[in-house]
Image (tube, rainbow, N blue to C red):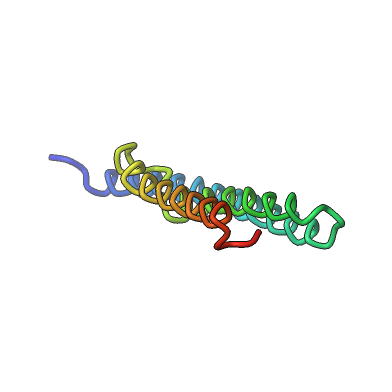
Amino acid sequence: MSDIHHEFISHASEDKAHSALNTKLIWKVFWILLGVTIFEVGISFSSIPHTILIWTFVALTLVKAYFIVGYFMHLRFEVVPLQWTILLPFILIVYLIILCLYEGVALGYLVY
């Protein structure tokens, strides 16, 4: 016969340790996102050329999206095929947008 009380206590202590680890990870990601956001606000007031500033914002936004999707939406902890199922359409859509913008500029429909 198993002792249910001891089983419950051991699972509760494991859950508490896991919860503390998750809380620490969430705060770490929060501080990273806050730092990136403060950096974005700081460089927006600088005299960096406009084109470089735009590409910097795009790169920093992708970094923030990685942390949000990976940790707050738990995609980082999923199996690899599920990650690719979600990420591949996103990558293809971004590629399509870049391709359309490039063609629009080349054909003269879009002035850059």
